[in-house]
Image (cartoon, rainbow, N blue to C red; front, top):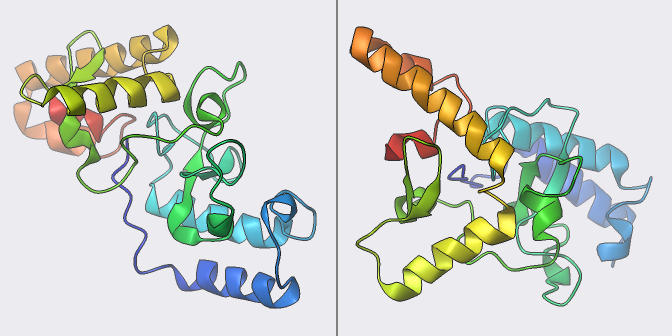
Length: 199
């Protein structure tokens, strides 16, 4: 996952959300996907895309600026609703839209993530050279459960995703064997670069 830092809120996003709040006082979850909010949402998405360096906050696959969705880290609706966070920038992430709803925000739906894409989140995860994610072995049983639940909720063990991580790991290991000094530069521009630091 990307270790998102939302502060300070980008000026463009802050202005967009303030302008919308002024134009639609009392707006709630039902207004988030309306045409009225769309221009403001595009500004927010552009800011998120920039701070996430073009990656999905959850799976770390490449994401075009105009694709994907503004994802609520804590759900705005459903059984675990946090409606007061509907228009709160610190609750947003730019997430991919999976065509089969088997990963990321669409898979998460209204579940609560035990581990959110925040600073330090990746310290709970271990990654194998085959691309599999698991809890760090030294974690407490409670924290291991949190990791497994996060992986399940986001579908981070979905086979095509694991395969893509393995391909990137293979490329990193090959480069490390031939030109180790180039590994940091190589990783800085690639998918999965945050979780691969756990190798």
